[in-house]
Length: 474
Image (tube, rainbow, N blue to C red; front, side, top):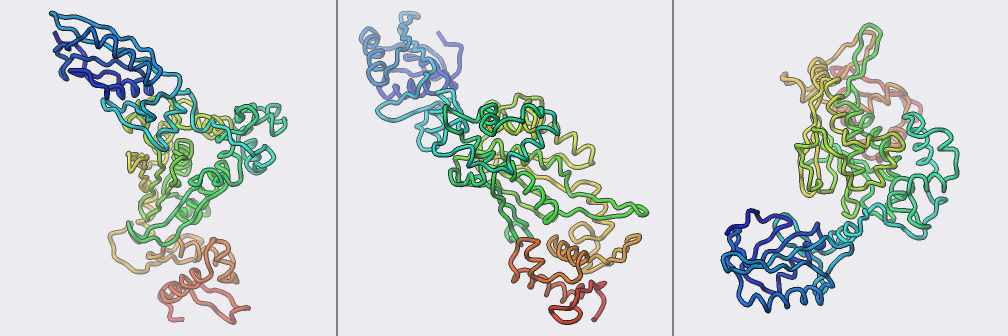
């Protein structure tokens, strides 16, 4: 006889009994339950066991005495061959075997330690990581700016009414399920505390501009409450790193962005909400001339694959309490429609749909330049977007007398834009605006002078900047 089942997460076949198989029973109890067959070969063929009568007494006693579990141990017979079917229910509490914890992963049994053990214990209890209370923190310790952002967004998106928001800070947090008994939860601290890194060292965003895959030109870090980090990161990326290309139709100024901001905001929100904050690695955003990569640590749910993201699927947030806060303020949907929204925005912008992939324990998403951006970049002969090898070219735009160099980095463009707006700005003033050191700014200003794109006229304190066309010997 052959059992018409295959080994998988909740089914295991063993030819004979060994006490070490108590680990398998422990793993079933800590996962989703399962069935262990004794006297059955790997292919499901019943081979039978010896001394079945003794085992029928020993097995349930060993399960009870080592783990405190009561399992169904059924002795079955086929063609005079006796075999056991041991049925294990999912435990309501973490189960250990000789002081160690085990779980099922696919068709294997694995010991659980460290962060994984913490997550497993919470999962067995039906709780999530972000619902755990944090002592010695009160509502008064939270950031007023974060609450202002929450209220403004919630009203704009009609998620909450003015009446809902016209309550004390404590009542609002209770209504958002941010308390566990008398303690604020981890979700509350992440969303509203001015420095969540006191408890969760990776609760920030790291952004860097790469000249190539190895060399970083400059970088920033975004700290503070997660509600603040969203717009801070967006501003840095779209103002400092990926500034829009400017063109004119008559007197109408048009801004063409590298990648749709609303679509990238959606990716950033996904990263913040689904991140594994138990791991000591921040969200990382890599900006290149022709692409943006965003990565966050946290494995995909076992029931969801990368290919499912662009299909209709259930929302399975790693941090559901945090996701609820972002939903209440109108930042996200609650139906697993994030990637559908990204697709719609990209089609409207004629932009390529981002490509997600599982990468080094997390999810990485690559965003390429939109078709309108590439077209305009080629027209402006921007380095990296044209087949014509030029060091410097002049782009004359209607009603604009400013010449644009093709080999400028985004940072050099930002500095020239600041100078256009204020010809007497100092190097230290530029450094303050761009959150960089004066030494870095001085080095870039020197490069611009060597390229014959910039010159300082007059004394250091009382002079002014003059932007050149790239051919001047001044």
